[in-house]
Amino acid sequence: MQKRENFASQFGLIMAAVGSAVGLGNIWRFSYIVGINGGGAFLVVYLLCVVLVGLPVLIAELTIGRSSGLSSVSAFQKLAPRSFWWIVGVMGVLAATTIGCYYPTVAGWSLGYVFESMFDWNALVGDTGAAFTEFSAGWKAIVFAAAALAVTVVVLLRGVTAGIERCSKLLMPMLGVIMVVLVVRSLTLPGAMEGVRFLFAPDFTKLTVGGFLDALGHSFYSLSLGMGVMITYSSYMKKDTDLPSATVSIVTMDTAIAILAGLAIFPAVFAMGLDPGEGAGLAFVTLPAAFASMPFGQIFSILFFLLVFIAALTSLISILQVPLALLEDRFHFSVKKGLAVVSAVVIVFGVPSVLSFGPLAGFTILGMDYFTLMDRLANDIFLPVAGLLGILFILFSFGVAASKREFLTGSKRESHFLATIYPFAIRFIAPAAIIVILLRAALSFAQG
Ligand code: TRP
Image (spheres, rainbow, N blue to C red):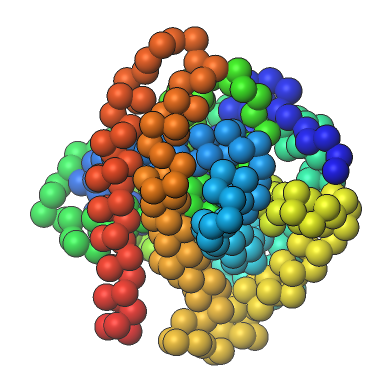
């Protein structure tokens, strides 16, 4: 077997992990679910979920990955030989592959919207709803999804250090800069304060049970948990990587980018008198309408969709790295051969996802179109089940104490507040919360 690569620097590693976490989830998905759930109160619940559920599960995944030095499935096999825990890894790979089949669709929209904003601005902002329908149902959606996938494959071909790490180190700071420019623009619009109030002033009467549970599920999704991404990435970390500070950086940056995205989007939406509760079209339908009526809106539109694409790209890289690392570690595939297999799968199962907005719009399984089905399958079933099983693995096989020890190995300090609360959180709070998500999925499924 070839010698495994490691991330060259702590900064590069953190950027790669942050690159995975910060994705469509932070901008496209976060803003629209905040929008439909009424704003501030939802944000409070979301933050609680990040701290109480996301954080402990992140620590669990980081310690599993680094102590084994192997990608998801093999990690479980090494840490618990002659047992069935590797199935947890398999669930994760399934989740990753499922998300990998629909993620390029939305990544393609954002890339396409960079070009539409540049070259077809007037058509784009004439009637933004109609423009989005036309774009997502047509040939362009396919071309741009393919382009998004192609760029990802090129990065992965270069390997962990030269590809993933280099690319994340360059793109993540760029994303930060563009984000700040957009936030400043949005906040200085007349009437912007209305949007700030929407995002930060909690009105708990607007919070429904569904909203509470949405927050829980999204905290998982946003931190890239439950499918072995963090296990795989941390397997490339050296023993002297400071896990507590990596954990703090990943969680703060992921959350900060989501809040900044909210600050870029809601003030603009309110300033232009638009509806924050638009739903999944918020970023692609409502926001261009807001750009249309601000000075230099075209430039801000280009920047915004470039930002979304960068965020999507570093996440898609991490998603495809999961099945790829499995093929490499477990079946000794070369990177090229592995990527050929992974791309073939993603293309075969990804094309129907793009077409769900066009020719396949009427084709439904269990009442959902193919795109929605993939999203629901991954988020409602694979992610939480894999996450819960991962926790059970820590509790009953790897051991909370061993996980905690691994967490502190390489840290400059003897103890850390996260290490202190981790055992309680991973034993009680996180599993209880995930069971709630699963019950909710079952309930909503039963109700159709
Ligand atoms: N976290 C990314 C986002 O917010 C998506 C993502 C990447 C993801 N890797 C993942 C979600 C692993 C769940 C599991 O868009």
